[in-house]
Amino acid sequence: MIRRLIFVALFSALCLTASAREVRPLTVAVLDVGGTPLAERVAERLAKTLGSSVMTETRLTVLDRGMSRAAARGVGYAGSLNMTLAEARSLGAAVGCNFFLTGDAQTVRRSSSARPVYFESYASVFVVSAHTGRLVHWDRPAAEADTIEAAETALLAKLDAGAGARYAAAVSEAAAREERGRFAGEESATVSVIDLSTDEGAVANRDLREPEPYRRLRPAYTDAASRAEAEATVDALVEIGADGEVGDVRVVRWAGFGLDEEVVATVRRMHFRPAQREGEPVPVRVLLRYNFRKPPKT
Image: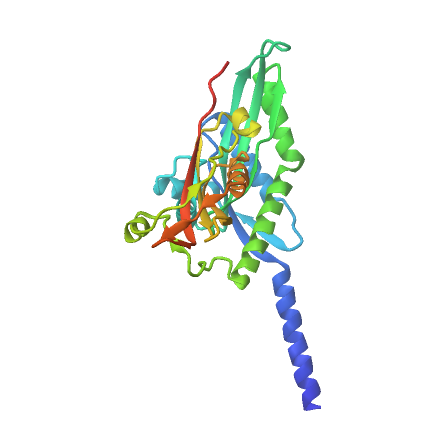
């Protein structure tokens, strides 16, 4: 009888734990997405659609926009869409959220051979984890019309049509990945790799010959970046084994618009002469930096 009571108690405790995990409360802050009237309308619309999104395993709470905006400005945030992980974590800590949305929203005048004059309204939306500092999702909904008013109305309608659900899903999936990563020790440092990614590491290992690529490859400037006329820097921490092959690649300054993925894919195609110490190859970690500038108009 006692064993049965213990079993029932344990079973009840497990059920309570499981039901407590069913709904994870997460806080999301919607920061400014520019200084135009359209940007204010877009930010308000994002906050509204996120707040009304219903997720089966996540309960999203959208923080007060005025307080979030004041906290971000208090730490000097001016709307950058090109941040290091440390900068993003510091911003998230100042705002006091699990995730935050930032971006840029504008209406611009366009022209083409087929359409002499038209207007494009767009919203570049970045979803960022305050815990890891990573960019977990980016999006750029846009709408075109013959007038400014029609373009902006069409863009807001696109946001109402499902943007909130997409961003809420991105938050929920990222939170689940982070939870799995904490259990798996994802953030633990790799053992026995010489770190040359910092000035201190480079100075401490002056006797080491750094790795050299057999062929330098340049990541492509993506169509999405071109459309947004993005100029940014992407930094990647890259582990290069004693065999000269690329191991772990981690973006530590992100830019969005597909540039981060392009950098990772390019680095993984590279092969190196391995780093050497006293003639012996050794595994190292280096920082590779790629600067992206919009190409000149032809």
